[in-house]
Length: 457
Image 1 (cartoon, rainbow, N blue to C red):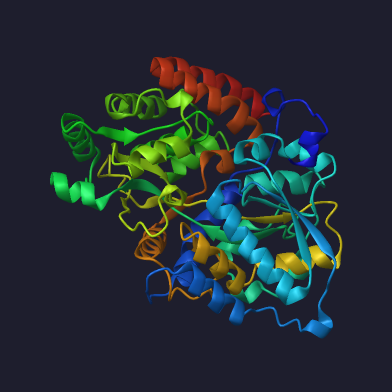
Image 2: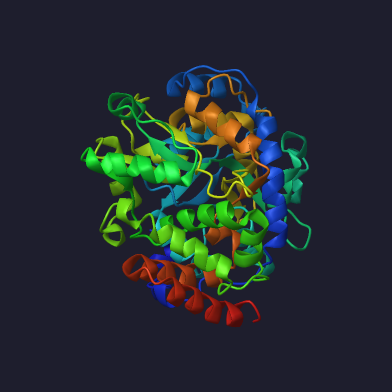
């Protein structure tokens, strides 16, 4: 457990977890990140092989530290990677780091939701030196509170390996860099190609085609769209895409990031009404189901599609390549489909993170070798470092890179693009209530009333 949890701090559900930060810079950074990912993409291909990827990565390790100059010692690492696949992938990275720099990494793993909900108290208590986190507003808030250590010295050695979008996403309002990008991944509709082939399904390009396909799946005895929101955040992905497909990327950011647009704008009600039109095709009982449980219904071919991040692949059996995705379909031809949701994950240095071991770990994590080593065990993401080879990317990874690269605009995710004190304590319960009653008027009025207070505080 994170030490803050062990200290018996009050449940984060009762806490204003985070606060303040503008979303404007995040939006810009996000858009640029698309280009950077494109740069990182490359074009070569081959099937993924975790072990060989790991071996080649270690063999060509960027850690030029020789045994004689190894840092040595121990560094503590707070991790939200509690699922088996990413947990094992991180361990492979830390083992290689130990070999390269002689530093032991003491990992403190907490389940993803508890980590996020308690992060504020964790950082104000006795945090680990390095910890997993997200780019954008959620990084900027902690930097503004003095809870992080700037890492411009680390960046001075790696800057040429990252495109401008990732650099911007790693920079706080004070102009200092605090974040090391590790990977990113797209959100899309995932499905099993074997099911589509057996049933004669075709990939939908419009929302009407999606609904027609969903109706056919239901007739065939499938749950058309797997859906889960027990943890609160997964439903945000549906809202993000519908809003960007109906009203465009800029309107979406003006709504969730800066509140320049009102939640009671009729355009927002249209989003919720359109979402309600999908209710008959969504898996029922979503509020009692985790995303992992929903993913298993896709794995078992009980559900036909699932809108989620590419990390859904972590739930598939090792070696199972019967997985593909298609972008969220077009809703309005005047708006198109040029916006993609593709969050960036990475690492921060806490205020307790001073020391050569923590800087050495961040430097290693920023290297293409570390990122490829991780992706060798968890190929559900694409590397942030633009010099990372794509030679061993899976077909799905190459498709993800192509999707992100083709996007005109990239959103991070509602709980990263918006103010933390609005996204978690306000949007999550509002969306969950909407999933219960489908009341578009009520949810928009509720969100606007609370946004007025929070965004002016």
